[in-house]
Image 1 (spheres, each protein chain N blue to C red):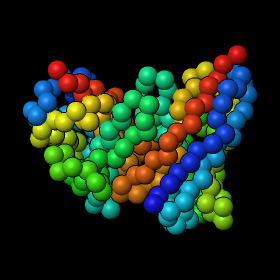
Image 2 (cartoon, rainbow over the protein chains, first blue to last red):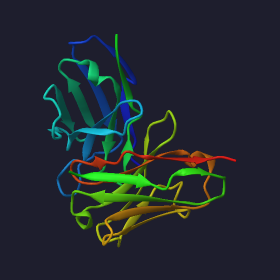
Image 3 (cartoon, rainbow over the protein chains, first blue to last red):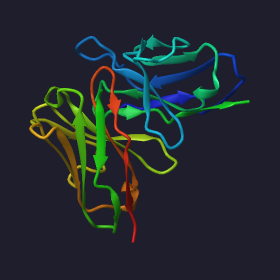
Amino acid sequence: DIVMTQTPLSSPVTLGQPASISCRSSHSLVHSDGNTYMSWLHQRPGQPPRLLIYQISIRFFGVPDRFSGSGAGTDFTLKISRVEPEDVGVYYCMQATHFPYSFGQGTKLQIK
Amino acid sequence: EVQLAESGGGLVQPGGSLRLSCAASGFTFSSYWMSWVRQAPGKGLEWVANIKEDGSVKYYMDSVRGRFTISRDNAKNSLYLQMNSLRGEDTAVYYCARESSGWRWGQGILVTVSS
């Protein structure tokens, strides 16, 4: 099974400052069709997960451009250029290349 | 607008059964793989099972294989999860999700397994 490891698990950040979350997979996430099915999700307390980024770097509809994704193979990064108050919550990376699909442990973003 | 609405959750005793449903709208249901994902209280996300567009292929996580059955009715735009032999560790919010390059998620439904 693919293990997704996120760092850090907790990230206190100052409003207006950048934030970065890393995700490493135990095996390459490149699918046989050539795509890499690696996504980033954001979840606020009591809410369902919300898709931010899919296929490494494609922002979902309505996601602000302060969010960006990068990486390849086994190493991926989510960056927030300037943290806003609504960005607090837990961020998850997810792979849907290999069965069983799997998620990272989650990174809690908090405002200092 | 894509909408996914789960129902059928609740409190059940260990060893009992429950059937979750997910009503889909706003897209061509029969054209997408569908998944169930769960989240235990205070924990992270865990993929449970998925099913191919026509229902011919199904995958499960190890801990539910043989106890849970995923199914769909494309005529009713509905996804199901039959859960048998429920255990305490199955307690979670269960989300229905449409697979695609950009996954879409339902609001979730709580299943509590307790005596």
